[in-house]
Length: 494
Image 1 (tube, helix red, strand yellow):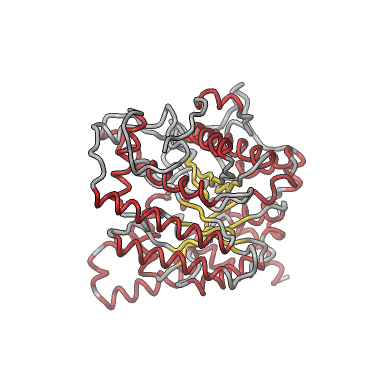
Image 2 (cartoon, one colour):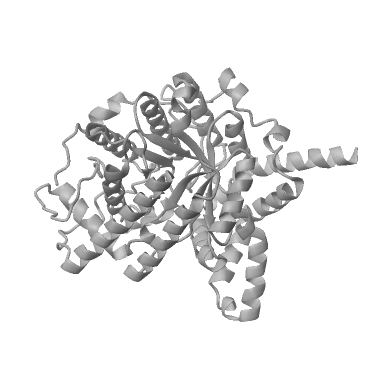
């Protein structure tokens, strides 16, 4: 069915009241941060350096009192965290670890058992919530006692066929079921990658067809359901240079199966009243991911209660325009839409693909532009949820972005946004930011991957490769952890 016609993104951009045009380059990186930019002091359009030193914000969002920040964390836990964070910040060690995991050494049972034992007792226990939903539930309870919530991530992705997709779906359904035995609201979201319930070949074919229809609106897609805008006028279309063939009957059947899987999971989340957040992935398949996400949201997002959330990657040049277009269309349809705002994880691969095809990267040219886009999307979503429907997850490890969001929330009126806003950081990382936001009165969640170590390890290796900057840029967290450990040691001695 045809989509509603809405104003061009360029007109909608005029309605955006920016939060602040950028963020400090000296802060902790955001969830899935862009890597490889040249860092410079950030400036406003007028040329003045940007800071978030507003007195009110500093008073309510204080990261300097480390004793207060880490009061709920035991010394053994803090010590283990310090050791793990220092280890992953040492890139040569990460390189060696990834080489070993991919080498033939893992084919030798004894060596494999030793290596897996080391990983299990160090990085796995630090960055993962457990081997199954029950263990993840215990980790959620521990977080809950510290005033935080959990985003459960059953670490599945890249299913090759429909049988694997069905098995993965059952894993997600079981995860939702497990939340019913936990305290209400202790689990904020179920997180899923569409590639876990849809073969990559289907996503690639559907994305090609959607891109071609954007180029040529007369191009008919008989299988297409109601959705929200997927592209802006500036969205990259270079992945599809030739007119694609229509879906075969088998491909249409596979697409329908994917849609039914997502609807089944959305229904389960709706019954449990736990929202489902669909992760963003590579730009080559993101059109199909957005199409499926929005189609499901149209059905299940009702009565100012968004159940299905999409994800906006702020490192993409068209991110802000696509967010404005999608939210405008959702408003016109009476759909309360939720979005998770991240910076993005696939910078290196995106640039390589674009370059290989002779096109410019879809990623912003500088980290300042990415920060500005992230903060503008944050400002827009905070104003939107304060004055209307929907919800937003601000997934960031960036302290300056956190300060700016806190200031904006108080400017608008924190009571208007508190229940519709969630901050999020990775499990085992950015603890001081999480605790600082918690102490400032906001809902804060940790992104908690779980599953058997054999299943989760490939997932973690991919995340490590995608997020090298995130692993090595946790300087402030390491410093604060060392500081509080020194204080506790002195207190114990004297």
